[in-house]
Image (cartoon, each protein chain N blue to C red):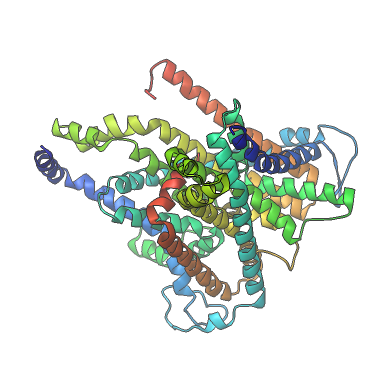
Length: 284
Length: 289
């Protein structure tokens, strides 16, 4: 009787593991072969692509760019997502759910369509630039295509919805009564935030931040469209190397570097946090 | 007691109303930021202008002209995207439900490992998944002569791979709240195992299945990198068609077809809300990890 549950786990597990292991092993293996041009690859197992990556400042710069825009997008996303998540989680009426649905709805629309909207919004004659120019805040139109600012805006569009939904479930775990108690005893709103809401949501906040960062590191579409061929991150470079140059070996190497750098950054930040916790610098 | 505390809270909020307003303005700014591109696309699609000054928001010359100009390729791409989305979501449910049941109810030791193995595809950047599948198809093709890239099956397999974890996540979330006594009651009253599953377990976990299926569908429907690497010119999904259209020549008809897609997505959301309620749809999402 009891064996039943293990048995039904087998077919889906088999499919998942088979697809994952074979595809990952094959692409990792391909990263060790030299590209011969026109999609051909060498037969010798060597580290030539990895040497190329770590000896070329262009590739290293792209890796750094990826980390940089992902970091900024993560920070700005959190700055918007946390207040919204808090607001929705503390709403007593049905409207909270409707507000959350609005967010989820926006994440469901493919990012390509949203980028259309952003193009029009930030176009030279568009609403935003004309207003800002009129108010004298900027003296020349802000272009959203082809610079890192635009890429960060695009990444935020990609992650903000997920961020709100993630943090919503974090805030929900903090009992409302704690805040009320603090307020009754005369704590200011700011103090309640600083002493109750932020410390209690910190574990979830950190986990969420890492997830958003990972999403940004792997994001392709928004960066490709808003980077306009001038901002390169690893995913964009992978697509370019594979589709335009047919260098599958180098594409594999870039993918492997992307995967492992994401993994490394996650492990490092968790390790740092663990250390800080041990020294009681923060309470997690 | 309750009333007293709320009176104190009220006086408190009056005193600190300034930061409160800033807080609300900040939050509504984010909404404007998130939703205005969609409104702008829908609005601009209604503007009829000459080919080079077409894109304008707010529209000044209202017309449905661009809706009549949607190229055939968009409809083909849309039908491919819908077919892929529905089928991969359906298959993801077929595989995700047993996986979730097995994960929650079995008593094996390495459950955490299996769980993270099943959920791993969500953590792999989609462009890497696309490249890995492309390489796998090449190798498989070299061995057997059957090349899967550029075919429906090839796309489906990759989309299924990405979709399964979403279904597993939402169904596991529902199963963890499941009251096992319901099943025991059905069994003790003489229902067979299969009948118990179909009449008791399945109806209870259905909200999770719908929510997971919806996520799997939306992930498949909105994906660019995987479909781009695995498709061939002339046989592409809708987002990829838009992506290429944007890189090459801008045809304002894309605004019209995008608006149709926006309203279709809205419609799917509303149907789901009717089926399982907003709360179920949103709650199961938070527990994805």
